[in-house]
Every structure is written in C-alpha cells, then in structure tokens.
Image 1 (cartoon, rainbow, N blue to C red):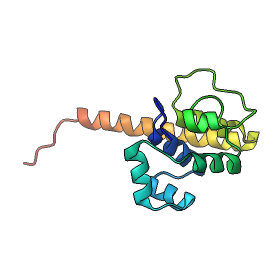
Image 2 (cartoon, rainbow, N blue to C red):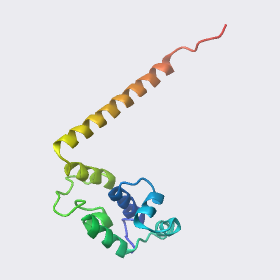
Image 3 (tube, helix red, strand yellow):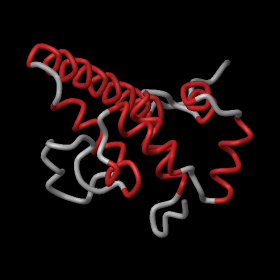
Image 4 (cartoon, rainbow, N blue to C red):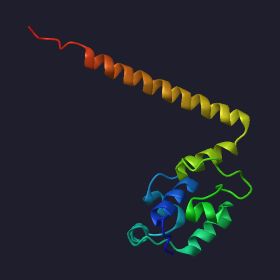
Amino acid sequence: MKLGKKTAGDVLDRLQIVFGVGSDSQLCVTVGVPRATMGNWRSRDSVPYELCVRVAEAEGLSLDWLLRGEGPMKPGEVAPVTSANTPQEDAILSLYRALGDADRRDIQSAVEEKKRLRDIEQRLEELESQRPEQRLG
C-alpha cells in the first residue's frame, strides 16, 4: 500500500505508539513478522493493508489515523485541535485523555519532576562552564 505524503515509516511509527514499543525490532515481535520484512516495508515505502486493517479492528483504531495520521486515534474521540502536533504527540494526548483523574495526576507529577530535573541539570552545566579552571600547583 503506497501512502503518498504519509510514508510507510509514519504508519510503522504509529503502530509503535499503539503497541507501546520503541523500536522496529519490538514491533516485529508484537505483530509477528521477521525484522527483514519490516525493513523491506520501510525501504519500499509499503505496509500491507491487511495488517493495518487487522490491527485497527483489534485495537479499536481509526484507519484514517493509522494510515494517514489524520483525525483522532480512536473513533468517537475528539480530533486534535491543531495539526502542529506530531502523530506521536496526538497519540499520547489521546491516550492521556482516556485515563482517569488519578492517573492523569500521576502522569503530570512525573512529567513535572522530569522537567525539574532537566532544568537542574541544565543549570548545573551552565555553572560548571562558568567555573574557572582549577590549576594544579
């Protein structure tokens, strides 16, 4: 299935999001195809339509989202307001919205803590770069 402006790589990236995996190797295990097959899909810019339909039906996904990266991840969800988001950002937002309040608070706390640590690391690097070199004498 040729995808025009939306590449097979984009579809495979969205499949990684769906299955919560971070690599093609992990996706291969999940969908049950050899790694070389997936490499061929990427290089030929072609993903089997049957696989996409099967995954969409099994996971309750919108084919528009899976194949073209358009609209909500799942039918009946509100589509993202802006198109400035990447497909991964849209998928994360969709999954986040499906969670309960307690889970959302946990995620927000974890993200805030991660941001705080990154800010501290950046500030430490700035301070270290400003520190005069110590000379051995």
